[in-house]
Length: 263
Ligand SMILES: [Fe+2]
Image 1: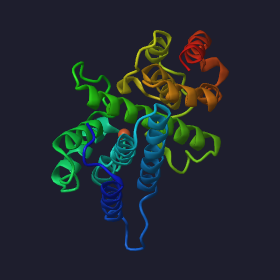
Image 2: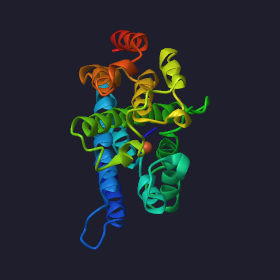
Image 3: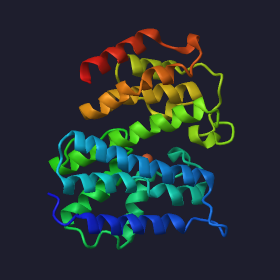
Image 4: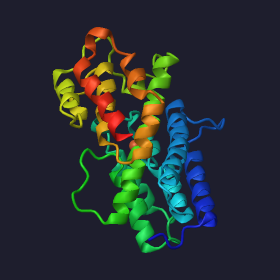
């Protein structure tokens, strides 16, 4: 499937992305801290995608595709934040669709094949959707599933890091400015209990946000991703951020069993 992608095209695309991000810098050369967060997130997702793909024994052209899709997946975040001052899609735009538009309007992908264009554009558009289309070409599915895994791995890191380093006060937008000290919604606890993906509409508090992330673990696609989640003790780290009374212990136990079986 991957025809034209090579190190040279990869480097060119990386430069175009960096130039695009630079266009959001102020006169002193600084990005808004929330955009800086997404810029660093994009780079880490690129690395995660490459690492997971490498663990799956994908070949070098596919690894480059994996890495570039990881880098570009949130390209819509920059104009989203500039236009709406939020990363909450329901209060602004779907950032996957916004990213698709940014790329479709650009000339970044012209040197790649039509199929490569399609896979990159659709992977960006679909990386954040609640339910993937049931019919997708096999190659597209491989990359969409990969970037969704890599994205989740880094969002786990960003959330844990912000809570553990207590930086949410300065950057509350990381969790959409959601209030703390509110018990989780019963609907999200049920979703976790029944291995369903929680809906963003039900997220009303920091606890909901944390439980929604735990639901994502059931949506992971590749064994190397699940292994990373286990090794990084993501479940324990997220659970530790919740008051003991807010922890649905049966659901957490079941999640840990899932991880042991799947890793
Ligand atoms: Fe995203």
